[in-house]
Image (cartoon, rainbow, N blue to C red):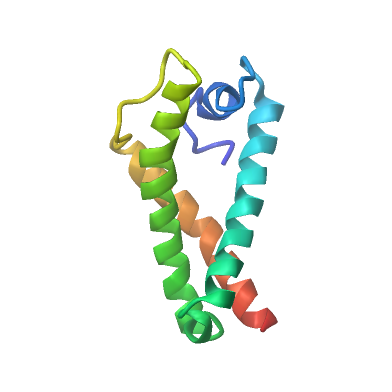
Length: 127
């Protein structure tokens, strides 16, 4: 994350979502990690109580769900929610809506997939 996120996303943009003026690298890092924890809990709730419970318990199903979850988190949160949130808090450099830029969106998607696959596999192994 530290090496692939384009500056100033981690140290300025993410903290700005919570009203923290940057650069604030530690705050950006902590907030992004917190988002990861919340997304992990959301995944568990979705598969535990939804129709994907059985595929989520199998290794191949978990891999597929990890790829899909990584893509969805990028499309919904990074492309749609983040620019609206930043505009709502008055961040002057808010990205356009929708926030789809290349290669940044591809890098973000890969990062979210790299996060999601171990999450979904860990869930499958624990059930």
